[in-house]
Image 1 (cartoon, rainbow, N blue to C red):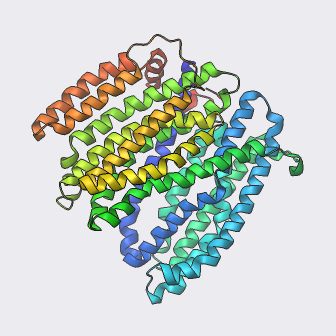
Image 2: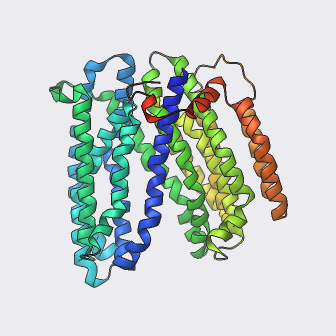
Length: 505
């Protein structure tokens, strides 16, 4: 990979990171006045509306990811004549799925509001109307994911981020704008729908103006969708099973331990898993590049694989080491003495799991880029019952730390299998090796163990400082390769105009 290509990968990763981090900042600023203005109950219902918008993505059944993979692969193969057919057919299916989903949401709203949610009688009608208004946006939410997938397949991450940031910010700021005039949930949710409509139109206009194949008329009956639908089907299985494994632990805790233990577990979980925005940003930029290169340039796939793996290892180690070493102090600084001491042990185990899960994102997207999401789905289907049994056993034996150990054990096994599966699709690199990534990871895991067991705060602070100083030359000369160092050096002089948006990896 050229230095310019590496710079583009770094820029795209940085743009993805900004796109995920800034909404968190907006939320921190907007949520307090929203709570004060709407009141606790209305704000709680608004958070459900935000959650529903997120879960609406289930109605796209993996098609947006499949479209990104399909478009990137055809761009890499030079099969641009097929792009008009698959994009327009996929978008038509997505709109249809969105309409069906909207009808389902509208139909179940009375049952949800009257019999499932504990809504005050005075807010029942208002909540029902707000949810039905929200359902109207479902076709826009689902098809926007497809349009964004087309943009990302072309690696135009600057545009994707520029379009996404105002949308996500408006989810919080839109309801704030109506507070001076009304506290109505219907008005607040209507602002969310307006934001979605504007974002959808912006995505659509950009795609039509930028990509010639979006303006081409085709007969959808002649489009072959078999490979995309198979990809989407297996991705849907993964998207269905993965949340079960993500949320299974808290349901087991609620069943086996006092309900307060759920808070004692979920709070450190929510804190530590926020670090996953780093690998998510990196692999989000790598995925279309791997999909585009897979068919005719396996050497490039190997370079992308190695480079993204090194980047994640180097970026995540300092974050996780600080969490593991200073877990009790971090929780006390954040929440005072609200949580028991065992929550610090939970945070430490989960932080190690987050580190392993972060590096596993590389083989995960490699398998998806190679068109083999079925391997991931089958792995998760096999894991699910064993994971449930492991949580049950360890929760009964060691309580909350046992649940965290089960989660870390599951993601570690998942990572090992994913790396083994990915070896079939990634040729061995011929580049000279300094310190292998595997050896680096082993040393880092040892550092986590030492940092967690030191008895005093002063000893842990000294250890953290010493390891950080030692890590800098190890990362620069031992883990990063010549290309990565060249990219980081070039970034000191980087400015937005220095790379054409058409430049490819």
